[in-house]
Amino acid sequence: DALRDELRALMLPGQTLQLSVQRLSVLDDPALAVAFASSLRTTTSPSISLGGEVEARRLHWVDSAELRKQLADINRAHHRKDAAGHTSDAAGARGIRTLEVPVFVLEPDLSADSGGDVPLLIDMEHQAKSLEDMVLVVQSAVRSWVSP
Image (tube, rainbow, N blue to C red; front, side, top):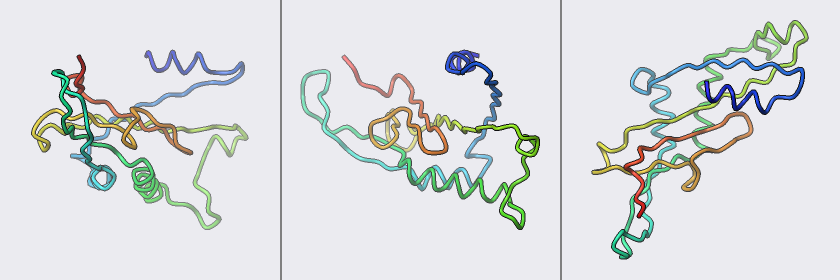
């Protein structure tokens, strides 16, 4: 409901909002699992420990360009086009202009394979990123962020 309220605040007069939420699990969908796995990267970067020492810090990140490509491939496979190259769109057939923006919120559990809690980012520095045709968001557990 909070997301819906924030989006409504951004709307112009005469616009309407339709929001649908669909929870998907990579455990249940092999194509999503491949998309996520092929876009996941790991790096090590310098960090200052709570004691003031420089230490190596592991970081998981999602390559947004690769994830976008993989998700577009999945979308094309699920929405076959007719001979003219169009998908069926009832709203478009009625002359209504619509904009559909998928928002993917990734909530992975990376702690099991990394030996500890590691934050997940997009392109090594973002928690959310707007792309040409979608929005990517990652959520990491609070305990995965070291801070004084």
